[in-house]
Length: 266
Image (tube, rainbow, N blue to C red; front, side):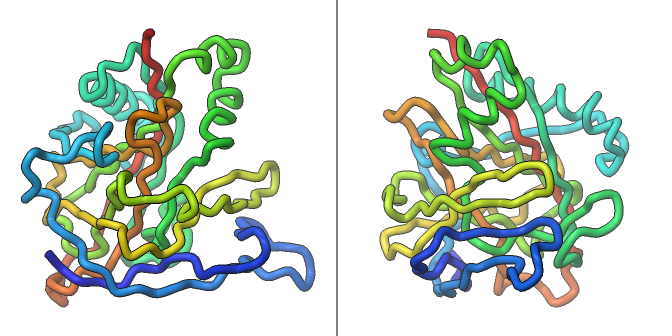
């Protein structure tokens, strides 16, 4: 167990908004304020039984890649996407998995660098909401969407170190069972061509936070960011954090996260 400060969303009367392009004159890039809280973050490697996607909302898996260069977009989309889809199918028994988006992150960055590489996200959030999860199916699968949404669908992220072990800016995840509906605040992400919606997380002392210590490059964390089945874990908030046990000369974290849609037969 370690203790670290996490950035929650402070209470606010208006809807939270982030801009990902220069906002109109006089409008701030974001209208939010952070609520910094010191919390305990337990090592999920010590949990017995091991955490699962449908109970806690996250799980650890083995993933070795044949991709030579994960900073090459063509390699990610032609090689790594297929490996991630196979991993999610095997982990969930989904009948179909579609990898559709990815982010590269490097711990030395605070914004966006070359080739779209970004810094770690250091506020507690969940990538999809009750509205934006199904909307993503419509956006990506068009005429198939209505039929697919009549069955169970989940959005599952696959987060993997590009090199390891991870010491700097590891990923903390919140046990989905400890998150109450009122803790999740719909938040707009304004892009030039669209508006996305995520959940920001309000502080609740009942939250239980975990991480997998010293993750290796042949390991991956699966996170449930949406599930249409209300009997299972549905939203798993997460954030990077500063590990107080990390050495001063620890290598900057480099990681790749792929988002997938998982569809299930009745």
